[in-house]
Amino acid sequence: MSDVLIQGGRIITAVDDYVADILIQDGKIEAIGRSLSVESAQTYDATGLFVFPGGVDVHTHMESSQGPAITCDTYETGTISAAFGGTTTIIDFAQQEKGESAKATFDRRLELAEPQIGIDVGFHLILTDVRPEVLSELPDLINHDGVSSFKMFMAYPDILMVDDASIFRTMRTVGTHGGMVNLHAENGAVIQVLIEEALAQGNTSPKYHALTRPRIMEAEATHRAIRLAELAEIPVYIVHLSSEEALQVVVEARDRGIPAFAETCPHYLFLTIEKYDIPGFESAKYVMTPPLREHSCQHALWRGLRFDDLQIVSTDHCPFCLNEQPLGMNYSKQLGKNDFSKIPNGAPGV
Image 1 (cartoon, helix red, strand yellow):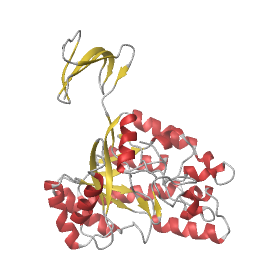
Image 2 (image 1 turned 90 degrees about the horizontal axis):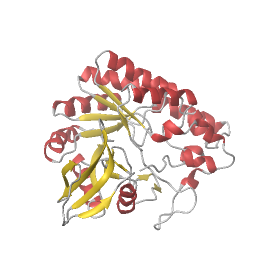
Image 3 (image 1 turned 120 degrees about the vertical axis):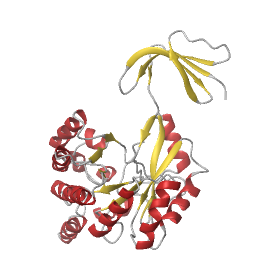
Image 4 (image 1 turned 45 degrees about the vertical axis):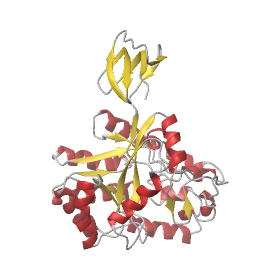
């Protein structure tokens, strides 16, 4: 691998902002300084340009499925896109099928991704079937396979949702070995009632995706998740937090010394619930879970980032095509044309 010298760039790190040269040897930064010179190096003039570290996106869903729907990227196309956007590491998801072992879930996903990836990739493991034999596998996954985070859903009953007892058992198991549980925090049972009522009243358009997933049900599940973690005496991580009510629950827990952490996403910071008022089916582009929220939530999220109440911004990259589907895949947002609950949830972001 040839040496690379980036000259005169404005270097931005978490704590510094300065102009300097960067020497890269064997793929690693060897030196940062002024007026560096290496005759054999491939040299780039970065005068007037920013030089950032490669981005790390801790929440992506590549080559993923939701029922019959399949995302419109693969690990190859998705990681190439990430690299072009400056993201050099992603943490994706290996989703357990019912009856499948945790180890088999991880191995299956790794086998699919490894030949395709163009950047660094790690995995969270989604647990949907928490049996004693599955729990017994988790220490080895943490200690030998490098899988230290396990995602569980408090939403999507009969598909992904697990009960509180399963969450609590998993927390105690992984916490003992230095792992962490990540939670999709929405009250799935209550939301399902609201969805059924909306459809029974003939309300089928995409905006009812948002109206049946109220902010208070995100806050309730966030509160429950943190209390379970408090009892289990382990840290907890709330994914894609979208509402000011849920954020307040996290803030109150952290003020009490509870190691509760949360992420939000760019779409919650820059887009609002008004997107669901776009006429026709165009608003299905913005159907993701949790849904887009009001301006007041946006203000709260920005404030949360400023004061470290939110620790991470991730994309929750999960792209489904609105109309035609490339790469020979036949399913898209159109699955929910006449029923908002069947619209694949997700949007591109990486």
